[in-house]
Image (cartoon, rainbow, N blue to C red; front, side):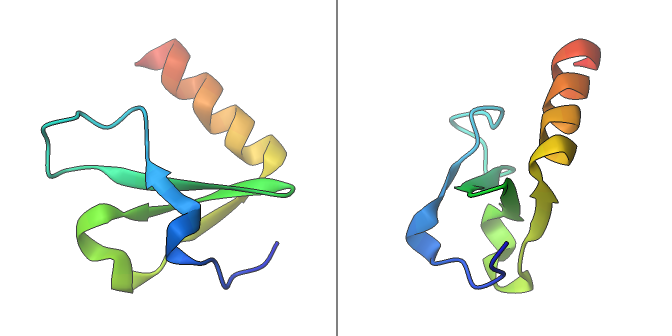
Length: 64
């Protein structure tokens, strides 16, 4: 996966509260996803392979 992800590739996560300043942004990438803090974009992002991202989402849905 490419670590140089353009800003326009990121979108606000559906798990973020619409009125909150505490949210993350997600970029769907070939073979995985990247996430970053909306308020701290310059800190970079975390990248996850497709299987890792699917496991994270599954855990969030299951455990809340």
